[in-house]
Length: 293
Image: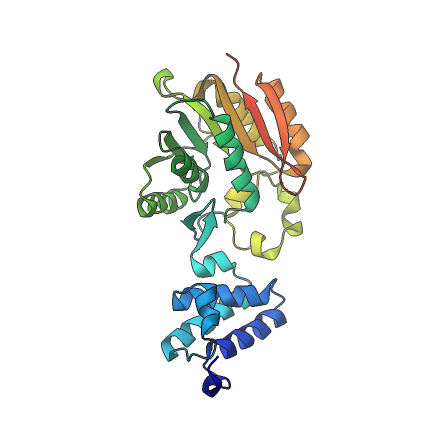
């Protein structure tokens, strides 16, 4: 503690207290924790260092930057956009308004994908709707022997994914592919052992039920499936035999309310061993299946 600095309005503790009050007034969740994350980012320190000398004065430039970031959060902008990144299975994944912010349940999808690859040497993996590249990059990071490809229809999303791959020094190839543009498949020599996807699955009618931080900041093309929440599952299931090797695995994230319907789509398409797994909250969110041998 630094008694001479305790009442300094530019001290770390004073800035945190004011930011907490501002974020509380704006109705932000976990206002103290958000304020801490922002100040740690500005100062380039961890939480222990932040509180080791709470009375230390923050420079005018850093104070101005911090207060601007607080105002962005108070206005409703996601913390991850303000910081410019999020954490995904231990990787720092940069995000922008061009990509959906990865959620914890998608980390569980990546875990299910890794489980599906157990026992497969030098697997080939295709991540459809890769967005920030979080799933593809996590799989490459945890299975360095894998050959991983990520597809997305959005050039802006692909630019984010490629930048993440370069920064993380992970060799993942990304390509612009529209799943609904004619016949989509791979040559037999390039077919994959795993097809994984977190596709858009929210029906347009549910838009008003989403938190504003999701509805207003995540790209709509990554969220909404139009009038039919199962349309992407039909496309993925129908194309799986042309994308996967016989016996290849399929792992998909799904809307908890439509998990049974999505599983039925996979079965009708002829996929085998279709299963529905729950996330850590006990909601059915992960579909698993196999392409017929």
